[in-house]
Amino acid sequence: MRLLAIASLLLLSTTANAALNGHCSVNGTSGVCISTANCASDGGKSTAGFCPNDPDDIRCCTKTTCGNGGSCKWTDQCSNATVSSTYFTLAPLVGVEYLLTGVGQCPGPADFKCCQASGGGDGIPTIPKNKCQPHVVTNGYIILNQFPNKVHTVWCYANKPGDHGTGTALDLMVGNRNPIGQTIAEWAMENHERLKVKYIIWGQRIWNVEREGTPRPWTRWRQMEDRGDNTANHWDHPHISFLAG
Image (cartoon, rainbow, N blue to C red; front, top):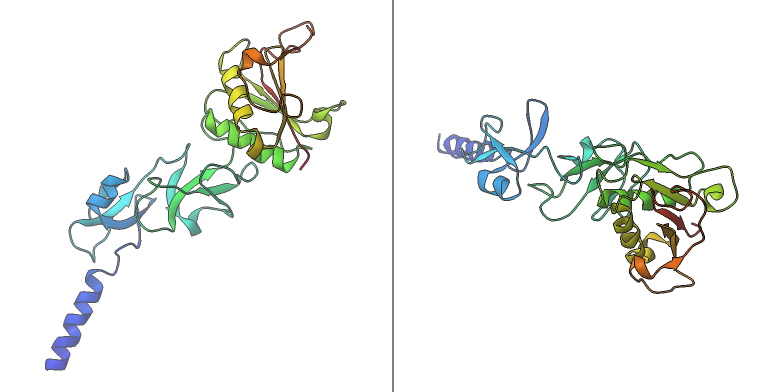
C-alpha cells in the first residue's frame, strides 16, 4: 500500500506540470503554457482553462502580433519555414514564411517563435520574382521591412539594358516627391555593405559605392542630368542597384 501511495504521489506530481512550456491552443490560436507573469512580460495574453494539468498561474499564453504582421507559433507550425533571422538578413522568397528571432518577439521556450511571411503582408508589397535575382529579392525585403506602409509597388526586371535587364535593380515606388524616398535611399546607402548595394538614385542625384566610397547626405550626392519627367528623374521612387550575386 505504501508503494502504491508513493507511486500515486509521483504520478500526480508528474501530471501537475506536464504541460508547462508545452503546446496549447485558444480558439485555434497557437500558444504555450507558461506563467502569467512571463506571458505578460513578453506582451502575450494569458487565458485560463487551456493548460488543465498545471497550477492556476500557468495558463495558455498567445501572442497574435509580432515582427511585421507575424504571429507567435511553434516552429513546426510555421509552414515551409527554413530560415531564422533577427534582422531579416536572410528573408526567403515571396510566399515563404520564416522565423523571426530576437528578444521579446515571443514568450516561452526557444521553439515558440514569430512566424512571418516574407512578402505581401500588411504594408509590405511583393517583389516580383520573375527574372529578379534571389539575393536582390532577399535584400529588397530587408529594406521594405524597415519601411512598412511606405512603398506601394516594387519593380525589378525590365527587358532593357542595364541592371534592370539583369534583374539586379529595384524601383521602390513611393509617390511623387514623397520625402520618404530620400529616407529610404539614405538608409540603403548606410547599409550598403550588408545589402551589397552598387549604387542608389533618388531625386536626380546618385550615390555610387565605387565612386563616392563613403556614405554622405543625399544633398551631397552627385547631380544627374534632367531626363524629362519625375519618373525618369527618380522623384517618385528610389532606384537601388545591387552587385552581382
